[in-house]
Image (cartoon, rainbow, N blue to C red; front, side, top):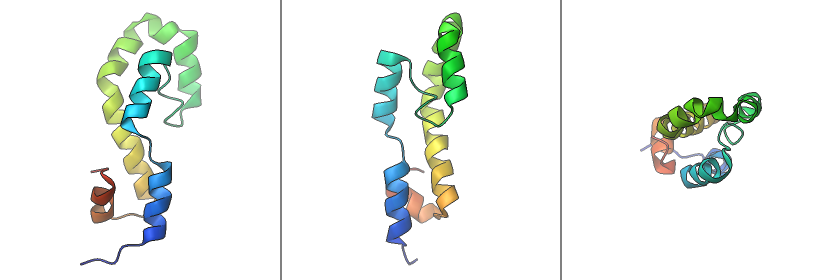
Length: 91
């Protein structure tokens, strides 16, 4: 059994994005890229009115994967292993 570094786990838990929160922000405000650290894309999304609706429609199908990828990247940046990521529900 591997030794778990609780400080890294707590840091990751504080930085992970909640899937429910990001989905609610997207559905009511169109806010998804900003939550995932991509402010330039968020501004472009707003300026183009969600790519005239096409981009917004496609985002409905890609948002869950983007949230998972964002959370996985946070865990990898902090140096968490696969077991720790599974404990946090990232994998």
